[in-house]
Length: 397
Image 1 (cartoon, rainbow, N blue to C red):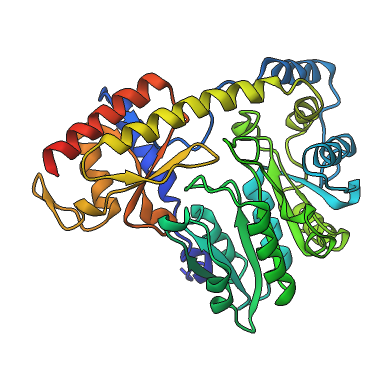
Image 2 (image 1 turned 90 degrees about the horizontal axis):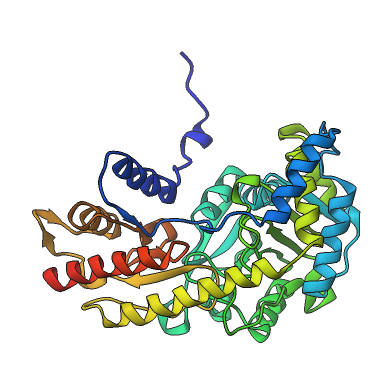
């Protein structure tokens, strides 16, 4: 038989999903596994949103919508962007997709030609790298470090620019680090993009989960930034609606039209019932978001303080999202239970096998000296899991 697509055979599977699946398999076989791998809130979708979806199902009229989303939902998104982000958009600027990941896919497909380069600050969300490749682009990683709270420096961005550079991806609050860029830092990035005529893909999916800082959208800081920015957001994290699969973009009409055309042939409209539920989410009671944020903040503070007391590891306190990056470089090169810990993958594997704790290896995010812990799990699980990690580190330090 003829060979398969060379490009798509080169796409790597999501390492975060692979670890989560392995932990789930162990749990189902009866092993008492504490998992820190979750990338979604552990709260149920608020009742008023669930009720709106049920009512819509009973009402009927749940067939196809416009490929780029319901006009009523686009209106609700525009109102949200104005209310929360001081951004003025109209319906024609909005494309509603099947999750923020789908929105990122559409954005890169619309922007890139073969060989175009996209700057990705590292550590980075696992799918950015592969999504660029899927659009025939070239991912260019720019390293950040813990000393600067994992924020990329403009001087490092300048050194990465070539004549092929087309765009930069900014993720604030950041997965996996929890980094939140300040207004001044985003202004520097905006000026960098204007100076080199680059597009900005601004992934703001965690904007509501922020602690002690303030979220700024780079597009709101200057009209010059806005015209070259694609704002990425969605309902999954803030409203605990991960499985509902509703994301959206806000961009220039020109870019939105291209993305809408791509989506019309690839998937058509996002789930109709989920779109109606999203209208209710955006227009309705916002207090459940704050309740969830407070719970995450309590867990975050406990996790950071506890990690500080664990031997041979350290972390940078996150300001957003629901993740902590833990430095496990001390253990690299050691032999534990007959296995050489060459990298974060081996560390995660040994930790799972010896202590029944599931974590995500940092190499999935371009940071092999780290593991990622999620605090999107109960305080009970956090306490038990960190106790096991403490015992592991104390035993093998």
